[in-house]
Amino acid sequence: MKIQCDCGAFSAELTKFPQNSPGRVACYCDDCQRYLEKIKRSELLDAYGGTEIIPVYPADFKILSGKEKLKCNRLTPHGIDRWSTNCCQTPIANTKGKFPWVGINHKAYQNGDGPSLESLGEIKSRIFGKYKKGEPPFKVSEKMKLADAFVVLPFIFKGFIGKKTKGSPFYQSDGVTPSTKPSLLN
Image (cartoon, rainbow, N blue to C red; front, side, top):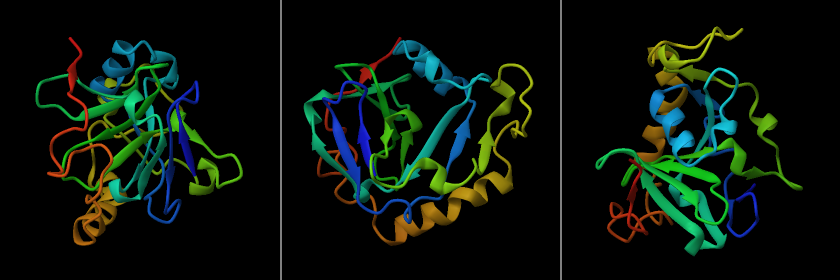
């Protein structure tokens, strides 16, 4: 599966897709909404304020070109790292240092000849519905329920056990320091 920004200056590939992903999830939190508003990409939210994210392991994410186009953003000084491109403001991923999770924004997927996002099936979990806009025709958990956690917990445990944080292209060799200095989006 290929990951690409809108203008094509940044591209990456997932080396173990779709087998190393728990599937599609959607987040309706105010942070995800605010982030897309701050980078002027709120059109990527669904009609109810949701962001579709597809988790993969950092070790399975390989940058092919345009690494210099990636920028690290944070909404707060110690918030999660939200990566977008500085060329066309395409949101690429959400990460946290030493955590086996790269939450790729659905917009960045370019399936070409590879599997499509639909190959992962329906969205398996929708969380933080207390921030949703309107009344969607599907169920959204107000926070994160136990059933929602069970969608991703096996993936996370397997990632820690298999050391899937090693070699993350988003962090320096210590696994914590972002590869580019984070910008605080005020």
